Amino acid sequence: MPLPSSGQISLSDIQGEFGGSNPIALSEYYGKGNAPASGQIELAADFYGTSASYSVNFLIVAGGGGGGNRFAASGAGAGGFRTSTQTVDGGTVISVQVGAGGSGGTNSSHGGFGGTSTISGSGLTTIQSAGGAGGISFDAGGPAIYTPDPGGSGGGSIQGRPGGQGNVPSVSPSQGNNGGGSAGTSSPNTGQGGGGGGAGNVGDTGSNSSGHEAGGGNGSVSNITGSSVTYAGGGGAAGRGGVREGPGGSGGGGPAGTGTAGTPGTANLGGGGGATDSNSGGGSGGSGVVILSVPTSNYSGTTTGSPTVTTSGSNTIMKFTGSGSYTA
Image (cartoon, rainbow, N blue to C red; front, side):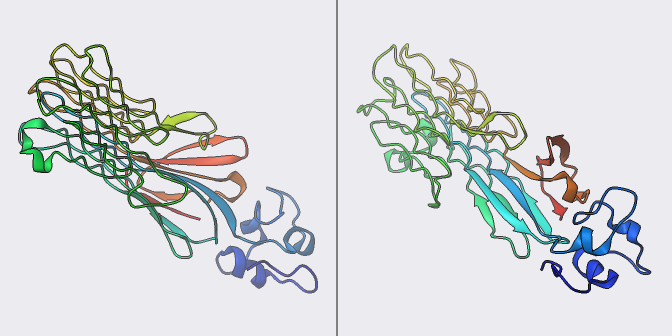
């Protein structure tokens, strides 16, 4: 809790709020509260009403799903895209988990789900972003399992079915969108699968038209690093019988392959993998990412998991591409 705004204030009060070692030395508290980075420190002037608590901005993107394989296969959904701003106390350990991308589909399996990305810690609201749903592979089984899966963003469909539901589990604001549906045909040799859903848009609907492209849904933009970056685009769907292959959605969605393997979603953007019309396998999903932005004046420098650390303006940014932690 904040130090008093009037009356007596002691070195032990400051240590209780900001931590430190014994014997207490004022030099430990340079840059804390309103204290300067060097020179003279005045207890009242520099520490009245100050606190070790500060705001942290978070971006949490899950892993994208893997694209479908063979005939009119569908694109995979992007990983869930979530943001949060929370107040943390000094010494709080923020644990980070980053979801992997889902495996690409084969002749005997649909595309795999992306992994969940999470932030958690004492006093924090835990935030989880759900992995993207995989695309449909035609030869992986009969019509009973051709229904596309839900996820952070949903997978696209085949054979006239609606796309998989996005924003599952449901959170507000939404973490993702539905996958694209497909045109009404029961034949695997015509038509096109639906594109995977993205954080910003629903995946395109597949068509029986030979000129149509069923692309993945576009992702969403974040400026948390100080630059505008698009994350969590859906994977493109595959066609059949001369139908062109769908592009990936902006934000790392993989395009479909034409007689070749589907393209993987981009690593650390949470993009869904692209499908393929061949036996070469769907593209794997792109891994997720978790990014923290803290005021540089409060940055402790204590991390695990080797995040990439940069600065932008008055903030220090930690980009986690694997599991780790930050101690506030």
